[in-house]
Image 1 (cartoon, rainbow, N blue to C red):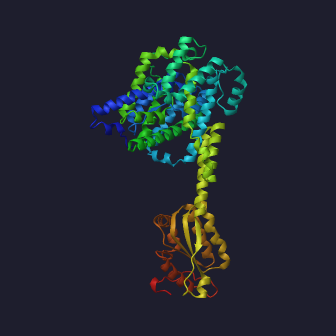
Image 2 (cartoon, one colour):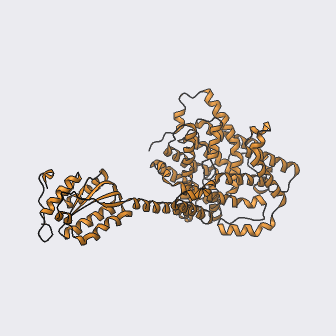
Image 3 (cartoon, rainbow, N blue to C red):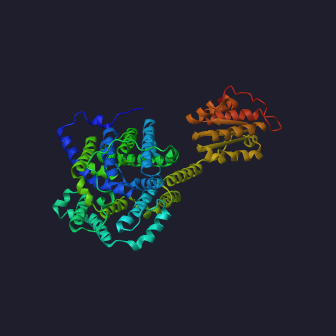
Length: 567
């Protein structure tokens, strides 16, 4: 296992100018992360305090130990439906255990250098579950956005929709007005910032949060706030504590933990890859997974929950001048200072405004243009994307990703199978009519694997012609798996029972290696595995000439001393 954080690579030559850029970016991202951390935590069924300490602890460790120079870690919107479902089904204590289990899985993935394999997940699956998560997040915010009288939303889709529909009559007008106004201000923030100078200095979410909090406090709006629902935010560092472990639930938490680990790995490495393109760098995916794992193990000890790389905050870090992990560490320290100094002010933060922020995040995180362009792509792409999207919304993200990967694999197998083909090779004009009936030559193209086994089996059906020799040219075959090898062995046995021979030629490295290691080369006979098609035809003519008059072959066809001289 290689453990080398990118921080070590950036420290040599680190100067005051770099620190100034990192400090400015860290402060900017820290200010932006504050409302997002609280909003994501509340949407996930957790307290705002848990969200803030997740951003502080996990954010610091991801920057300190990570494989990217500019990655910013913390709670993200993508985790909202997963975290909420775990809290509803198993409780907060088991969520913390699941987060730590996910951390262990991420550490194992990094230790076994599986970071590059995450990139094998098809883009259709990623877009499908990302858009599905965005819809689930949007649905989860209707309660606080409208101020509905619901004690707790079910985690299951149909129960959630039924509960929301039944409670629409309890919508609270002041909450709706504040939420709509907050959302409208968020949408128009950048445009207004072009005319109003002071707005340029604040990220939209923080500015809207400050305005919504001020209006709620000054006018005494009768809306739910962090103080009324959660009792505010403690102005102290939480005590280090291991969550209560119930061994009876441990087995049930494996699947949710795996979901957290996979989604965290996908999102963090996707964020790091996007960041690489913006700063002309290349991250270490395995080191990034190790850092994500450590962060998810440590954060629950302080009451935090699952964290990963945040694409929006990472992009903000880059735009603000952050170029080393120091910026991410400063972002965490800024959050810590805000909590310790300004925690009492959070008492008046309205949940309607936080809900508007999360709604805005859900709208922006979805790649909705993918639905408009579906008609340009294949049936396989459309099927995988829409199936993953539908299953994510209606059932479960884990099931959606599993189904998406299975569908992608099946469509890939079918595609490769369609590209694998067998074509007859015509014999030269100098070949006698007798040899034309006794010798059949075929060239294989593609990959001879389990998905294309039926292509080679067609040669077995051709046994009606009773050839004396079948020659297979494999120069266009890039791969053979054990199923393809078994089909070759079956073909050899079938021909041997008929007194006929099988000759292989022009093998590439992988097929030649498998045929030799399996012992099939010895069964076939070294003389029947040759380097060129010309040598294979010479061998075939010799075998056909040695055939008995009845059409069969002698038990052991004589070897050809000089294949190039054979007729």
